[in-house]
Length: 126
Length: 254
Image (cartoon, rainbow over all chains, first blue to last red; front, side):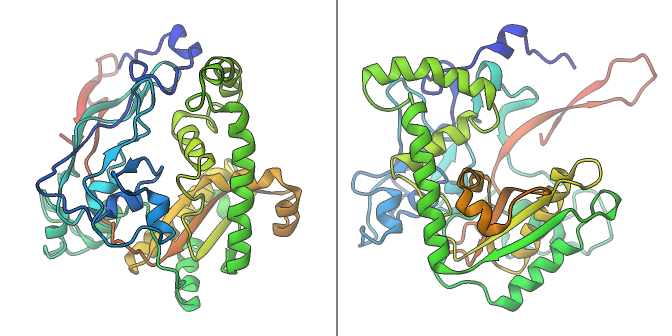
């Protein structure tokens, strides 16, 4: 296979906060299915899911109580990139199946991933 | 496919293969294992940790050198202290390096030398750990996920061939065994930051020939988060014709 990784790619470090140089995971939250339990906010690896009323640390430290936190969203940096790495832990933990994912995590230039494609598939039994 | 429904599905027997048959128990554990970052505060029973360690003891290694040393940390005070110190070190680094947050000046100036650092430590400062450390420095997420037990995998650098690989194999055995027993686990590479502090190097006895690069958090899962997720399909080359023929490209997972 011809792997497209040029010298230019090799030496250029992407700007981690620019969405044009970093493709970060794209999560879609279904507000009709979501009951605001906060499970996804609690288990997000980087703490990059927030709801209007709570954050991961609030739930872990027991500061947020009640169990109705509202529909979460992904934190976005000023230049558009998020911290979502498309691990989809939130989606597996969600008791209602309210989260879906659009594409994978693919940083640009030096850290470009070369044989992974953007389609996300469940394990297939061959 | 909803995984929550998949829990009841029947499983195939071990040591047999038919096309399209359901997962067997080993495959099921492999596919459904997720890195667990939410733990109950009570630790696993000691006997269970010993049993999980047995899976590590019987892992394959190059030349059967078993280049590992296990350290189990259950002491709450020590875990709290480790967390505190790790956050301290990360805050120190991110104070200089984090150009993704903060004011206008920081965004421009820090970016210039952060990119130079990234060139020197491309693995440690890849976008994923960089983002994570940035969040930790902001107090948005803990380092060790408040796990009740940490299992440190210390590498003996005198092993055959490539000792870090043996550590990986051993650790994966441990992780799969833990999940098959109903516990949760998470690989944590950020324990590396503690190695900048002589205090912790001395405490754990990390000097030549030892090196500590990774640890595994173990505990009972609090929100049950094991389950299958979608992953990127992968392009695989299959050399299945003549010597000079081009390989066939197949998309793995489609």
